[in-house]
Length: 166
Image (cartoon, rainbow, N blue to C red; front, side, top):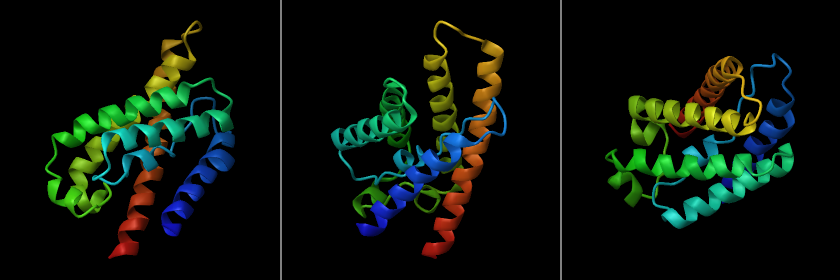
C-alpha cells in the first residue's frame, strides 16, 4: 500500500511540478497522470473506479486551476476504459487482483487501449477548454503532439515497471 501511494504521489508530483511547467511549445501539454486511472486494478468495482477518477480529476483541477475540466475528463476516461476493458479477456487477471498493464493485457491490447484513451482525454480537455474560442487547427496539432509525448512517457513508465517486476 505504501508503494502504491508513493507511486501515485510521484506521478502526480511529476505532472504538477514538471509537465505542467514544460515550456517546449504552445502545442505540447502532456497529461501523464491519467496512467494512474489507466492502470487501476481490474477487480475494483465500477463505483470505486468512478470515485477514484472523480478524486484524481478534482486534485488535478485544484493544482491546474481549471474549473472541473479534468474531473469531467477523468470520469469520461473511466467510463470509456470500462467499455474497452469489458471487451478484453481479463477475468483471470481480475480474479488475481492484478492491475491493468502491459504484463496483464499484452502489448497490443494495452497499446491500443492506451492510444484510444490518451487521444480521447487530450482532445476532450482541449475541446472543453476551447469552448467559445475554438481554433480547430491548434486543437488538432496540440492534441496529437501532447498525446504523442504522453504515450511516450507512459511507455517508459510501463517499461520501467515491467523490468522491475520480472
